[in-house]
Image (cartoon, rainbow, N blue to C red; front, top):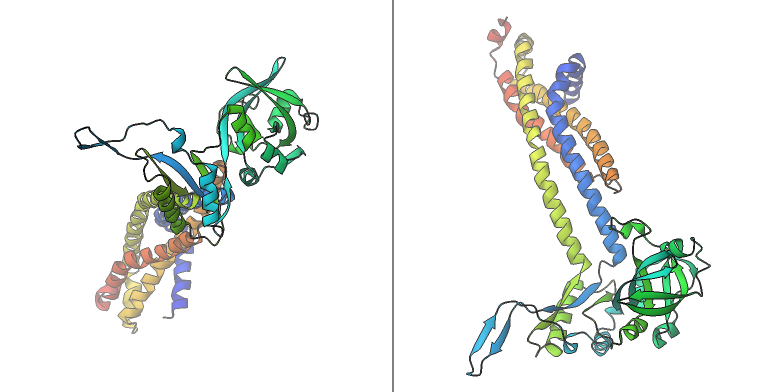
Length: 429
């Protein structure tokens, strides 16, 4: 019998026994739907994280000063002792400096497009009578400010003169304007504000208002209480603290053609060898968004696979159900099998017929499970705040796997039918 005729026969059998077929496919449907839903949610989370990190600069390299895992000290007798990790306060000699960073830009001009430098002054408050706004005072250089990708609602951004001369100018958020200027972003431009921080008063002139990204705020505080960034030119931030420019970490903005992994190794070796060779307590280390992304993606994939394996147990149960119903079906159609064999049907034809019927049963269940899984996964991803992103590979694998289940669990009943003695089958009541 031709393959197409076997498929038509199998579909007719499904229509003739709708309820029995549905109950048989239920394990396959639940298993496939669970796996697809989990993969959809996991893929949606991974895609969202990749997009977020890409927008933050996935190839950028963070160069930071960290304490060495161990330190050695030599006693007066000349004996060297190795001590485990202990916290050591950083001194001026331990920080990264502008001269070091300028050296890196000169050494790797094709790889480093810019260096993000920031200085966190602290959290303060701006008051006007009963109204107030909490602010987080942050100094930025032009590279850091550009990579913040802020939307300016009113006024202007910092100029080269602001950065070079350390002008006492500031950019505030629209939340700041909502709290102190009734949401009028143009009214605040040119106003002098006083920020209270550690019982000290700092005076700045507002030159611009940016749109605050509420999605980046993970605080449970209300909109009125949340502390938004008040940006200053980097030199202004250092002047307010009466400190020379020095950094515990900076971000190197690399070109798209840079091999980030090799570049990080080169930077670490160079800086540690030249500037931290004689430093007993501190060293520099590099990390990148791409490394973090790989770790997070690997973790999410591992979790998805583990949960999918657990959900896949129902596929095993569904396969056993398919085998059971095929055995029942063969028993019901024993005389039909005997008649076909008496008319000359070969064992291979009988075996193929029932394997195809089992495959069609599992395939239909798999397709229903895929559709149900995509819907459930999309709803779950939407509720978690992610755009649904079904895994094409997962869908293809699910359909292929459901067909494999049909072959595996359908072979034994089909082989049993093929080996029936036609005389015994015709005499079966």
